Length: 71
Image 1: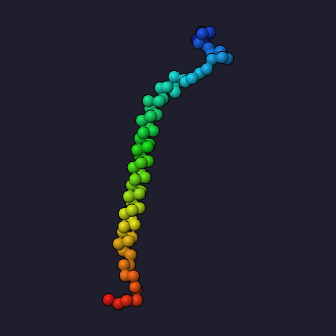
Image 2: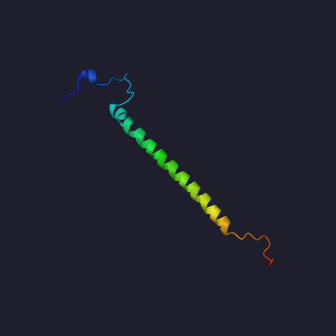
Image 3: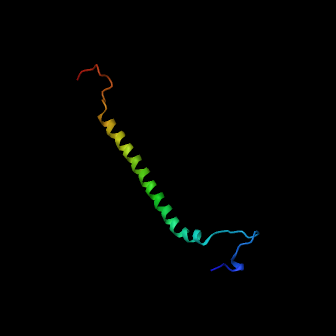
């Protein structure tokens, strides 16, 4: 099947968007949202884990400022 002359682009025509790109938008937007949410949760969890680790390390540190002093 040959394209009709009116369906062929001429040198002055501008292709703004292909129909396949327009059909992909509804699939890409939710995927980008999911990626953003996953990255946000991972970043938050790592930050909380780091803060928890710092609290534990401070709890086990020697709290005696003068190690020569005997109790």
